[in-house]
Image (cartoon, rainbow, N blue to C red):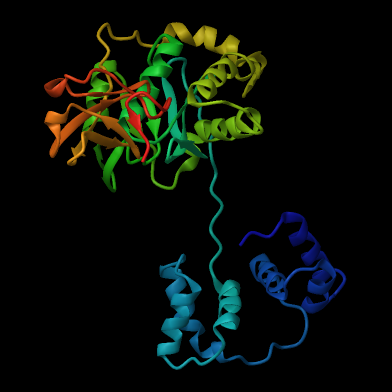
Length: 369
């Protein structure tokens, strides 16, 4: 629990300068008395007043302090269980308040401002922006955000899920919009990027590795519990929420992405470049563009393959919508190829050509039950 600095300052002043009791301070500042005791204990100053009354917890303080010294993040409920097994019979709530007084304070950690060379690095993440109703399906609205670490140029595109195919489509869209590829892409521990991590041993998603080889960039995950290492993309997602998505009206996904593209090229590019108040993001990106790696000559088509089952009726269900197929394919499992613009059969059973996408429109061969 974090106490605001101004409240901490008032508690210390009233207690040590004005000689107010902890109860009086709690009532006047409208805080719980445990907050006052915690601030006083963490300040490390001698306690003013009479000798505190004996407490049931006193006999267990050596155990508690030794345990917290070895496991400083151990929860108060687990400590209560350990003390209860050894005979403590006090209230769990009171025990939790007392533990806060004895828990070691986390040492302050200094951070250095991270700087990146032009074209060297970009940061990638997903953001969740609610849900959309597509036919009968309720789909999550996911924002793929990539930001160049040097110029802070933002690429934003919305998808209806966070699958690997859309994750890679977002990469292709960003590289195409920027006309080049950063040398390093920094990821959080996303399932789309990192399948398994044990210490420094990292197993990347094989599709991402193959994609990175085609576009010649290095995928690099941030360290565990080090959100500051990808603060640029996290701030960019917050900027998207407040400056673009808030009170935004759109008719469908294509309309939303068209507005996002205009916003990235307009308002987002015209803002001041963080750390360089004399330049805009647009001006910084103009200098950075020449440092990006060139795009490959043969980009890979990114199609999602989904196995669908045809029952006794000539329809397949995809994304909670039904699509007609030739009657000769009843009672079979077929493969559907899908992207953001269409759903179509695999070429092994191509008699029914391009099916309309359930993500974009209803009707045609779509059948509603």
